[in-house]
Image 1: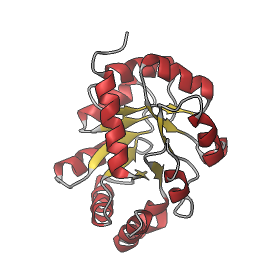
Image 2: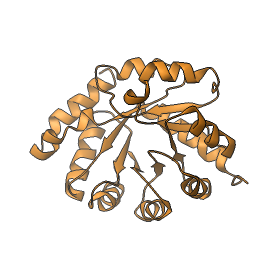
Image 3: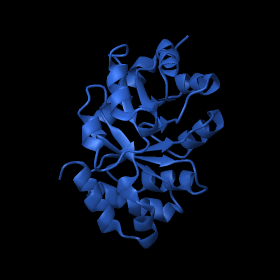
Image 4: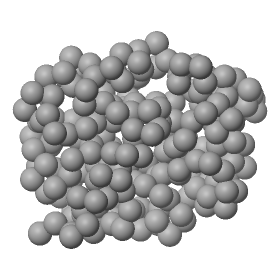
Length: 215
């Protein structure tokens, strides 16, 4: 049985993606780096970021960014299980993104008290999530599983679903994805290149963010 407010939380997730349009995916070395990067992305006009739980600093970075009071919605990505989900919520994550969604994680996402964007890579996975009440999904790894052509094909049987494609997308093709009727937002790390983060080149981060939004 779906949680009573899952439909509301899915609508909130969709609205978040529509506002964001571009979702930077951050893999961070420290909370300090995360805060500086978040400030640069906000200066470039972006409104939401996904901090992946791939590094030991991720949870501390989420908390630091939230505490800074920036005009950014901060989510946790690469959430793999219920324990990581709980930890991300405890550290202040405002939304959750998963790369895939096995049944146990789907159960936890249905109960989670915040917007969630579960990941799927096939029609069967999409159907399973649809049956649970999910309508706003991550499409990952987008470029490797058909990219724009796949999303066009999926729009036929799943016209009521929205996707945030992530994986292999760059500044050169982000707008082509955003032109699709089922894509309110694209995710990627092209505007937070590791060499820029390592060098503290926050002007490059801000400039790339602005270009991604068409500025």
